[in-house]
Length: 308
Ligand SMILES: [Zn+2]
Ligand SMILES: [Zn+2]
Image (cartoon, rainbow, N blue to C red):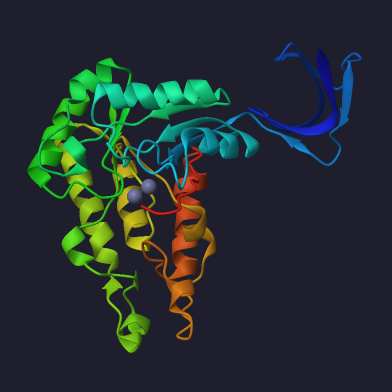
């Protein structure tokens, strides 16, 4: 069985080119301005063809919350969107802090058989923030990215220890940056609107303090750190400075933090609440685009996140 896609805009390392692609037995057999006939012919005139995407931040919710998502349904959604691999966040129940749970997630991904499901591991046992997970054992089982996503590691001494181990193990730590004591009960960005409405606000500082702390700890330990779903201009500024120093820091942004303007409708607060703040939409959006998406030539991952 072979398929030819004709006259598509193909995105390669060289940029965009209008090409034909022939796929035979599931493998790209030919690519050029004109390829030979195939069993099935597709007109790609109004289509882009891209390499498979990798989603570094997917909440597949299994095990524990199969009523909202399973590894199979998440795989289906990812495959439909052009993804060939998903990193499964560890805030499942039980959390992904032991080899059996990691292997279960990987196996369920293989059973679904649509793309590669790559389990992340917890930094702390049960994501409780009190004791380190068996990081070495998990790394031996193939885990390469560790995070307590859903919450940040609050204790700086514990985070420092995790960073020291991470260097030894050659793995990456990913942080959900939120000083939790600053966000108790928060439902929206802290601003004059939150005061006017009398609802608890989420200050930019809650994110930026942890970004700053972890950059300093990375400087001390040499650890590779990835910041999840950054949302404030101050965070972007800190990441830009860290990159300028040559620290192994990366960061990501979510689609809603790129596209949503600060807007509060007092008659319908439910529409105004986004998990994490949207601070000064335009400046954040421009800063993120310039610094994280474009400047380094790295595709910092846009991830879909329902919550956490
Ligand atoms: Zn998340
Ligand atoms: Zn998170």
